View 1 (cartoon, rainbow, N blue to C red):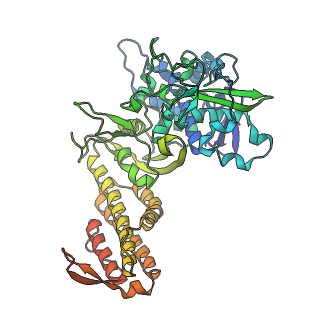
View 2 (view 1 turned 60 degrees about the vertical axis):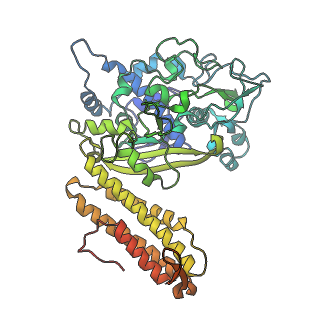
Length: 546
């Protein structure tokens, strides 16, 4: 895996090429990004590269007595070296080269060489591609349908360790948790529990640097899988901890980026993976409560689990519905921001974003960060992959700085008012049904549709946000929202039919004793009134309602 090509990369000229791990860091290839078989696979593979980068540069943080490691200085120095070979990574890979062999007879990468069940079961290769178990192989034929080449198998192996769904697994011989030949559910892979938040640079090497936090560099107890003792079928050293990186719980960012939630064995014939075995691996303690060392996810506060003065947070995946609108607050908020207190506890922002904001005054960096969001939504009991969630958002560094609490409140309010205006459109559509003779029922499709259509405009608006001209920019944004909502409302009216245009008499008043005429026109006027209240930052001199 160090020298054999297996990572599908997009180069600076737009072409694609398979590269090995050493190729990424040797300075001979300008890699723009990873372009593998799915966004989640790309993210999982990138986190393996991050763990390599973090651990390779860890020795630079071990300064002499009397000296102090300065993260901003380290970051700036590495930024200037991105075009050349990374000698520290090369030396680090030399030290652990035997652990990056997919077919090693004793220590195969992210596998257990002698993993087996009591019946010596094997399963089709589709088993390690859960997000596409049904569809991915329908496009294939012959050998490609029944097996994987080693490069693709390596990519899907890393994916499976990161995102494998929960449910009953094959019971491995040597795992004390097995009952009746079955391994009972221990939850999804760690990365599947998170809201993957990636700061994207102009090339892959810069992306790795932008997502490197001080803790990821300096944590002396942290160990990725290849620095630890070789796993067996059993859960990792639960009863007899053996020092740094060998205890049952996650030890740091690199440990979590390469967390071995499964024990896997790839079966190879004639240079192709023809079958696999997947059993339970290492369980995340307490369902992930206060596992806070992953620097690339927001964390949500759990009111139910926070008791007796103990505050509990869980990694927060992104919502599959209205992803950007519901993700903005956990991506930018800090606990000192307005609206948060002991009762309403703030989410925890991804550490990679906060780290960049903290050094922004000392280090030259882009004023706007390109953020890629990657997450998975699972089915019932997390026993299948339901949806892969992806998105992008531009976040000004100024918005993330600790002293920008008021600006963050303004942005969160702008997003909330946009959502509320879209909800008002769904209510309007429900009133059109009622005006045509039906029963009122909120219509989510117009709401979701307008939010999806307006999202790219909001992202553009956010990326151009000027802290010195916020009032005007928010007013301009709300004017645009109003125009879009009313334009969509007019389209709904045109399709509502003659009955809705004429309207009908409905009950009104607090006790329903009165009556009023509900028509498309009166529903439209109600919508206008709601928008005046919701979009209250519109400049009074700009009253251009239809």
